Image (cartoon, rainbow, N blue to C red; front, top):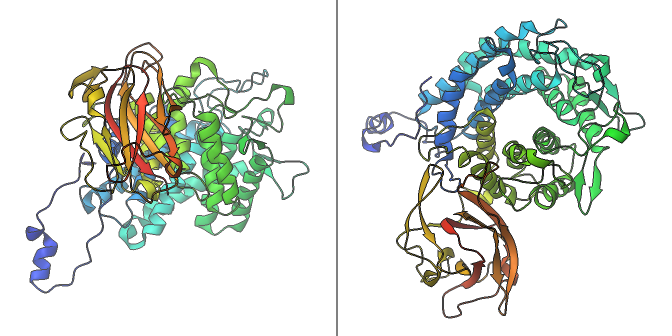
Length: 562
């Protein structure tokens, strides 16, 4: 497949459509473009997605390396989500590139089919190529055991691709034979798990969970693996018109819902519940929770859960998981730390934020928080090149999910944004809104480097350097603010309330877990309706913020959330 990195600019006067119109031939109306978005210093999410699809497709092949099945499942999900996000829109690079991506996705499924027969137990599936005692209870499973996590990851990717092909209709009608082959593969992975499940005693409505593996010792309600098999079960039921499968998937959502705990308007839950000793249960880590929280959104989309569930889940993200450090969020869903693993867990947790960014009843702030965590923990952390870099399969899936679930507030991008350079401190001439540096507190724009990333930035010249968010007069409600910065010591952002500065958000030192200096992007929110106007002679309401330690800032962004 030859997926180009950026959309091709076309001369409309010489396009085939223009020629056809000149000759009086009816042509389909032009599709609206698929809108791109930035991630702090990174100019194109779509560019990273397209390059990463190509690089991951080259690197991953579960038919040759059994242990790559989960990563290839992430890749397949990312491909399907990118295709879904681009449905009804002009595809970057043209329609031939859309068709090429479908061809590549089907090729990935064929590789997975070829590698699925090594698993034990008869049914096609995936697992590990080494013995594994998942729960530390002495019930070690042999190598090539069929596990719900790896098999579910692949099955969910296959299901998402099949649903895209179904919904695309005539666009991919020539893929009918491929679709039938893939549907058979999906069925052969999912149906054996229907007999590897257990009811949740006393639950009403009925609730049941899928086992962690085919082994009876693994008959435990592990929420993230139950989520994967349940999602794939519903997809199979939807594609085959099987109400029993769709009902069974809904019962799996109940197995999670009845184990949620309410805490200050948010949710907490364990990694594993029924079938596991109560004294050994712990709050789920945010890495495994990327699947559990996606399943919560899946349940809401099917009206199994309500907007109220999404409101509480959004608070879990903003009030418990988000720590104020964009590269090291709290490692467990109850807001506690998982220790040094917080760093790596943060890189995975972005997926859960992304899937819930546009959830009904939720909070669009999750989109901006996800972008900050993605840049800070994965992109800048690993020196991904600004205009030519790629990410691994998990990062790719996070990007595709952000593209698919971008909320209206961020369509196409942050409402206001300024990067260090000419005009970055311009006083507004009207009240349409914007962001700017407060010139007297900053050195002139200059190139600044952290890791291998060199960015134009302003260095603070005082320990209380200011910037402003300029608001339209009538704007009320929450406003998301994001800063791309680097600093050698920790400080905070403070907001001027008309008489004094009040703490708004931490600005941690931007060193990664190894101690290396990095660029980071962080996000916080303030209430526009209660904000003081600092410059009454300037159009709009001009909200003043200060940074309490020396730092270097590349970009400032702000977006009203409603």
